Image 1 (cartoon, rainbow, N blue to C red):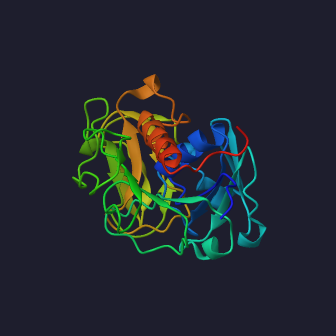
Image 2 (cartoon, rainbow, N blue to C red):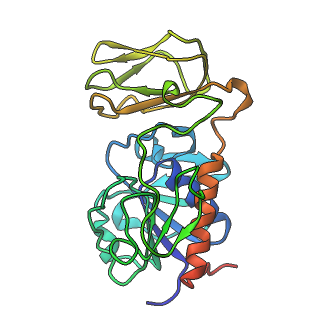
Length: 266
């Protein structure tokens, strides 16, 4: 396979998009593949929003929804395709695949051919599911490149932000779609009703800024993560890629260099 600097990322949520931003800025050409109804919460920094809107912008990088037949690995922007199984990987020239599905369990294999695979977070084992793994746990060397074994296991506990963990996470009280009463960036108080799912109120567990909410067309199951209230309030910008996503993106960049997968326009 000739070197083209083309990177396929399976998934287009927050971490995948942070990776994509760092890679595009470094000269790689990136395609992100998503499901037809993405469940991203931090939609202002997720290229998955292009599936709903047709076009989005994460910081200074534009992302456009394209048909699978129209993938070109364009320079300076992101192409987003609806391809949850990576079916067109057999037909495109990807130099490496980043598996960012974040299933936190052994992933369903992608048809990667000879392209090396970089896995994000738990569920992957080096030499079995991925060539290299990037640590996604904040307290286990976030962004480190793992060459043997696995990443730290999923704890099931939300990361500590502004002194809060579980209370900041909003979860669906029932199946259905979110009918929101507020938008990302709004300040809310503890106990406020932020919307309804299946006719049941979605209540904020603390005071802060809404940092993320799923799209109203996303189909939710009971208990699914649907939002995030950040207790730091106006001290944060929900349109900026998080420090966690930037660190994971830096890890992917290092992994690509270790694999000798280089950008072509640098």
